[in-house]
Structures are given as structure tokens and as C-alpha cells.
Length: 124
Image 1: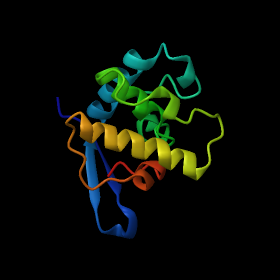
Image 2: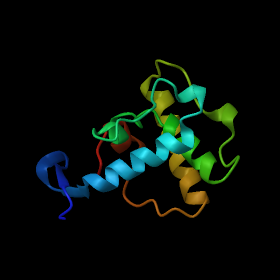
Image 3: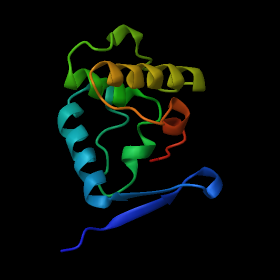
């Protein structure tokens, strides 16, 4: 059986990103399983594995910070994570920079992506 793919045009029409729907669903399922118990994520989880929740609900950085800590405990100090219901752009950017820097510190390859890309829900 052939996998289903989704293509998303980048800003300015310059880039095109393709991902397997199966891949998006697997990542969403994994996040739900790893973090579904966390009450501070109740407004975000569960992610709908059939939708683009993986991209849209990670925009404030909270899920990503928690996912980093699930991978390697205490990588990010919980006290440094902004957890307000209504975060402004500065709180979101702080969380996302924490997550991206922490991802690098535990050995993840983070290439050509910044906080604003995630806030804008760009899967590229």
C-alpha cells in the first residue's frame, strides 16, 4: 500500500515540504502517549492524529519543552517554562528557544528552524 503524503508550500513560495501523513500520525500518537498524563498540557492534548495538530498545538513551545524532558529528564528546568493559558509572543518565543537549545544540548540535529517558524505552524 502506498503512503499518503502532504505537501506544504513555504513562505514566499520558494520552498516545498513533503511529509508522510503516517509520519505525522505516529509523532502525534507518540506525544499523546508520552505526555497525555501531564495536566499542564490538558489544553493541548490529546493531539488529533488525523489533523495538523502536531504543527498548530506546538506553537507555544510547551509540548516541545515537555517532550525534551520526557526524552532526558531535567534538561529544561520546569520553573523556566512559561505555562500560562494565554501566552504572548515573548513567552512563546522564550519557550521555543528553550526547547530548540535543549534539543541541541541532548544531541538532536536542529537545522534551519527557529522559534518563529514553529509559532507560525510551518512544518518546514
